[in-house]
Amino acid sequence: MIDILYFAWVRERIGLPKERVETTAPTVMALVEELRAREERYEAAFADLASLRVALDQELSSFDAPLAGVREVAFFPPMTGG
Image (tube, rainbow, N blue to C red):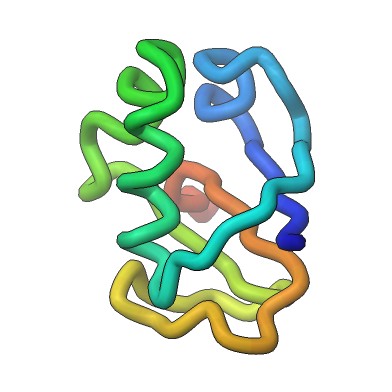
C-alpha cells in the first residue's frame, strides 16, 4: 500500500487530498498510468506531466524513479519563488 497525496489544482481535479492505493507499479510513471486509467478526473489531473512535480517520502524525485520501498507519493505543481 502506498499513500498518495495531492496538492493544489491536482487535489481540486481529483477531489481528494489523499488516498491509499494498492499498486504493483514499479515506477512513478507506471503509477500515474494506473491512476489515469481509473477515471476521467485522474486523466485530467495527470494530463500534463510537465506541469507536475513528484516527491517520494518527502524528497523531490522524478517520474522514472522506482517505487520499491516507498511509503508516500506526493503530486503537486511547481513551486514559485517570491
